[in-house]
Image 1 (cartoon, rainbow, N blue to C red):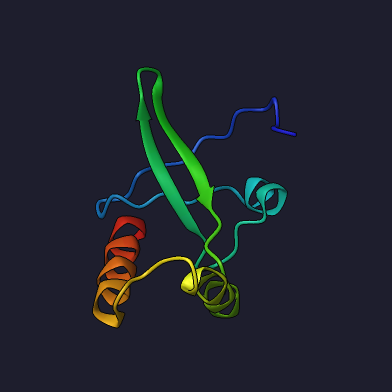
Image 2 (cartoon, rainbow, N blue to C red):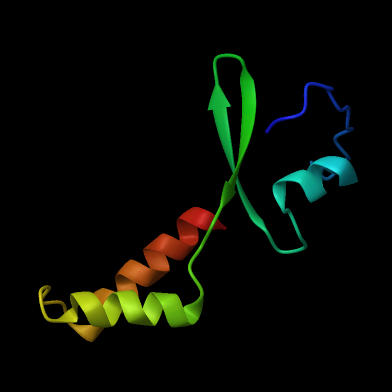
Length: 87
């Protein structure tokens, strides 16, 4: 469902860009949305990162708790590692 019309934006002195409102609406990008910047041989690609809510994350942890033997410290370390890759 990508638009065929290219949009132009400008990089600020702080390295920031504004994504045109038409594209923000089309792709559901709201304030706080995480985007992954992927370098390719053709340029940069922006990919929306859908992180689970706290409730979804807790449910996933509970579902796996019986099958995976990790200490609370190990879980905390893994959470911090995961967060640092998305910031």
